[in-house]
Length: 134
Image (tube, rainbow, N blue to C red; front, side):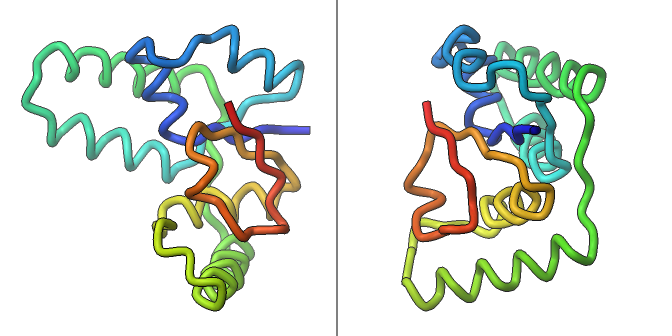
């Protein structure tokens, strides 16, 4: 079994808002994966940041993720699952969901992985998703 970790968890770990112990309690011995979507979100946060301390933390985080964890890319099947999830949410009207969260959810559903997040409301009304929360 694998687990994709949501961008908010990675940021929380880097900023010290989330403890590594809490994450590892949830993950157990499952293999951890990082999404290419998370890499994009972290790169955006890095290049758009004006705080030099945060830039350093974010750069170290991004470098560590790229070096230490398998990166999950997008495929045609992922895109189809994304479309199905987006349609489901449109019917259930979850205004809080954003497309990047849906891409992460689609990757987790496609791979049969869980998704670990600190923002469970971002993933409401997605019954196919195996969601773990901190």
